[in-house]
Length: 148
Image 1 (spheres, helix red, strand yellow):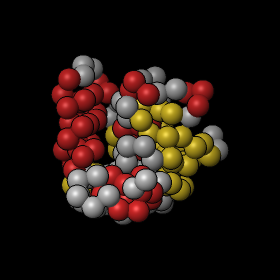
Image 2 (cartoon, helix red, strand yellow):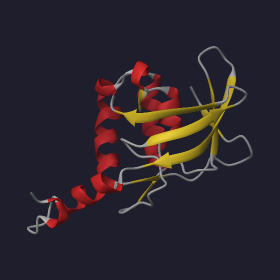
Image 3 (cartoon, one colour):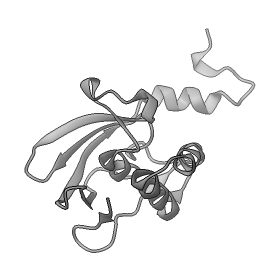
């Protein structure tokens, strides 16, 4: 798989520090083209903390459209959590790698294993703000609003 920009340059992508570290380890430990593609995406990513709520990150639910196939909604997960039947796709799939770090309106393309060029456009990104807030409070002494 090779990523390309449908209309010029590849879109800018943002990744938070935790995802960057986790996915760098995953890509380094993996073998094959998908791990290499993930590493390439991480190398060109801008690392930011925090990142806006509308950016695709690990655990995001994403609605996207592929060429003429209509809209799909999936959740981006680690390979061990992937379950196509429930809509959970691995970041180590071509679509999972392509989605990482994008925001609504951005498009990216890739050449599939069959040689066909495919393109997707992000329609919407849903991140649970409660989880983000709980994660942000996890390192503080103050238990915050999620304390029992």
